Image 1 (cartoon, rainbow, N blue to C red):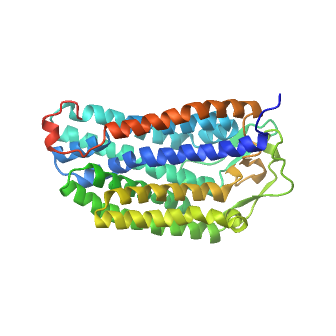
Image 2 (cartoon, one colour):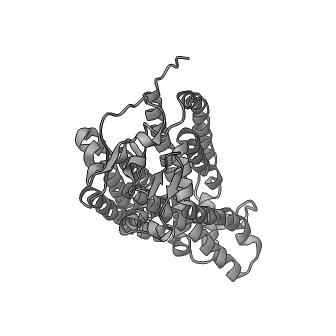
Image 3 (spheres, rainbow, N blue to C red):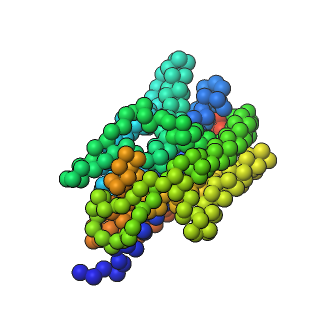
Length: 382
């Protein structure tokens, strides 16, 4: 059966859609994680902390749809990637899920008792539920850029030879700190828009400026490490972009500095790192000047640019192997079938606009600043 789109085109489309879903998650649920990370530091007293929680209360559950969609897309479109990454990063994934579980439990149980110790404990649990995923997601990206210690045997069974502590290398920790700084900046920009004018907003502005500058410095450090620190992989030989999904036909080799190849070949790609830097700078200037909307737009653009930089640098690699580069998973050798990708694309074209429309409507309906005074008159607030 002839399909309207050829196999290589569908593979590239799904590579792009995976990036869209990851960026969507980082921009929407990212400010939730950033706000939770800021909770113990910008709010003093129960009233202020409840107000901070209620700046994200109306939307945090809906924002996690992007996380679920991203995981589902990887499972359906890139089954080899899903199998290798979720088995190799099992302990890290478990740590992230455990931290994320703290968020709904913390939101629901924090105010069940008036005890100060009880509420403080749940506030720190919410901090862990925000900061730990932000850090670990960045560490995971750092490991992917370095290459993951896995190999495929003749039966295409993945053998992971790494350890949990081995995930935390200097470069991966730098990426983790960049991720945390990026999302803390995003969360701070959100609080300047959503928290009432007062001390909480002022503290968020102070921390947000530092986080934005840290994001700029860490992004520059990550670029220098990738360009000059010996990172990169390259596909050698002819590439059959329409060939069957057989991970053992990658023909990849480790090539220090190769993550810069795509930028040299396609200068327009430099737009992505430029957006990463300029967006963070705009967030810093917006937060500093008290311009809430430009600050939040800047942090969103920075998030878009930083994540896009990683994806564009690695293309066509999705999950390279640093112990057996020939086992590396790429866009061309690890996707689902032609028919599966096409059917999923049709479903996505139908339902993704619905998700976007509902998200926009929900934000519009529940827009407005949270205040301490509102906590005494609205019984629906956390």
